[in-house]
Image (cartoon, rainbow, N blue to C red; front, side, top):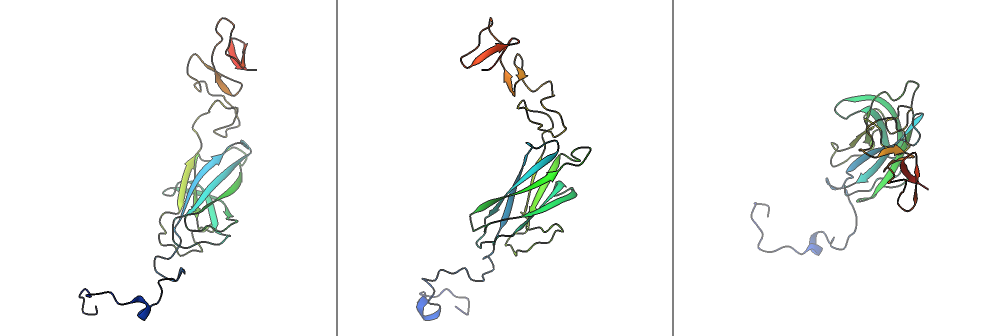
Length: 203
C-alpha cells in the first residue's frame, strides 16, 4: 500500500492494468538485450590469412536486429592491441539465440604480429555501440593461436610451416601423413593401413 503495509488482498488486475493476457516486451528497465561473444580461429588459410569466427549470443530479454557490429583486435580485453576490422550480423539475434560472424584477416608480410586475439560485440571499431544493454561488461571473447604445431597437415601457429615441431607425437609414434602413426610390427599393420618406411599409414 502507499503507507508501506502489505495489502490484505491483491487488487483485481483488470481494474487497474488489465494486462494478464498481454504479450508485449514494453519499455522496462530490464527489457534489453544482453550480448556475449565466443571467439575462435580457423587457420586453414594460414600463413596468408586467418578466419576469426565469433559466436554472438543474446542472453537478454529483447531481440537485436541484423547489422549488429562485431570488432576484432589483437591482444586481450585488458591489454588490447591493434584494431583489425569489423563485421556485422546478417540476421536477428533473438533472446536465447545466437549467430556466427566471421572476419577474414589478411596476415601481413612478416607473419602474425601477436598470438592473442579478442572480439567485442556491439562495437563499431571505436569502442562505441548501437545497443542499450542490461549488462555492458560482458561483450568480449578471447582466443589465441597455438604455441606449437599439431600433427594434422595444417599451419596451426600460422608461421608458414606445417607439422615442423619434433614433439607432436609421443614415442614410439611419428608424425606421418597428417597423423601420429604407430610403427609396423614385423612389417604388418592393422586393417586399413600399410607399412611404409616402418610406420603404419592409411591405405
